[in-house]
Image 1 (cartoon, rainbow over the protein chains, first blue to last red):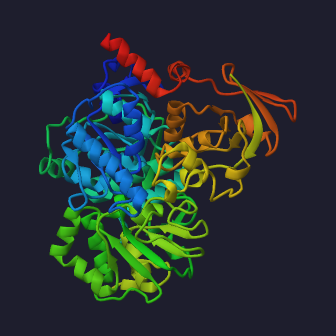
Image 2: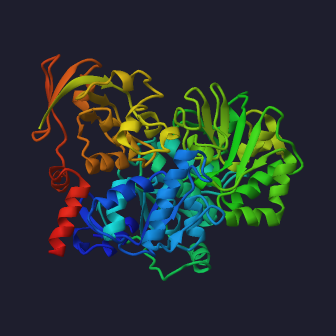
Image 3: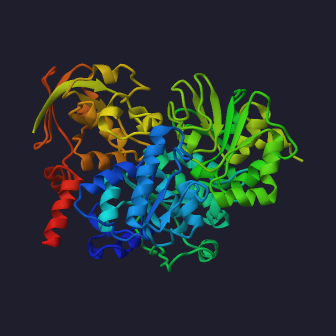
Length: 424
Length: 167
């Protein structure tokens, strides 16, 4: 019986390859273990209870202070301190300090730390982002990560795979975010619960790595354990320019068994926006009517890459952020920030009246750098719009890609890029 | 183990931001977190919940973030068990790993209301609604997970394995 990519990667990481069938439990070796300043302190506390002194491999544990860093208050500073001390005591190679860091899921691929064919576990639900590179990457809690740090192994249930095939040429201003919001709208926030998603098709072949990262990132918003893309020349070019070690590419067998196959006509998808309070509440921006906004956030592990900033700059260039709107742009890593600076994008954002911040998850989870007051509304390129996600429980978050976010910043209300830029 | 408590009922897709808002994640003790459990969707919960009470909810309970702070805050609040139609994957793992009992039973959820009193037999996977007199069978745990539960969570389970391998 043929295997999907997810099954092949897991099988290659276990001593029980024959047992690697959907629904079975296996113990898998992990290539990379990740945690951040919110989740690492609990993982470190639980690690201490295991009765081991050292992590299994100091080169395979990655710790990134990104959520409430640069430290937003004393308690956050203490959490970062716990993580920093652990990294030093364990001699970890990949601890990224403020000034050299990035939002973890922008940073790790950029540094060549996560590679095709890897099993990556992270104490952050958006660890699934690395599926864009053909890795089996999944989010777990801190206790799982404590065990993975100690043993280099993790238990998992082999997931069934849903295949989603995209066909057709994308319309102007439509990107990975619109594709994934549309898809989650179709299958729902629990549509892929406990399952892996394999994204493929001609539209995906044409999609940039940045677009694929955005889509893989939000696989969790459909409940998925992982969202995987097939490795192609684009993936190889990206990875080979930065890899820290060798990698193995896995492709699905022709007779692989999928629990469900969906075909999506991507040419029919227009720019999307997801209404509060669930990512599945997506609809075409052109249908929403007049909804005034108070804030726009452009950044995050979903859309904080250079390509995303280029799209936003294309709309903000020569225009002004509406006087009623705070537009906050957050490059996803120091490298993205520097590249954007060198390209002149940062100057364009500032000239347009936007604030530009050092990399942080900050406002995405209502931490800092753009928390909403009661009754306020934000259009955000982040990944979640749950009640209270960006601040006060009576605030609202509308999820969109960078084009819609930038257009809305200019219009002062939810707007499609075409309304703002015109058709030429 | 038998659990008994009053029901707090919630709907579908109770997310981890609802269980414990991210603004409180600058610390991680169960005690501190439990003071804010369910704050944004049920502000009275944390002060009124009693030791042993049971949360009953719909589909995809615990969706969203990987934060273990979510099951920790529920456990810290004294909740003895969560019964839902289904659980989000990471929440499910986290609950098993930290020893917060969780059960899946769509029928029990459908026929249970806030304020009912439930009795849960974890070994047998049986839920009895003492208010209505009806009984339900929960979806059984896979055998592998029973081993983690029996050990008292993933840390004691792993610790034992490490000791056995070392010795």
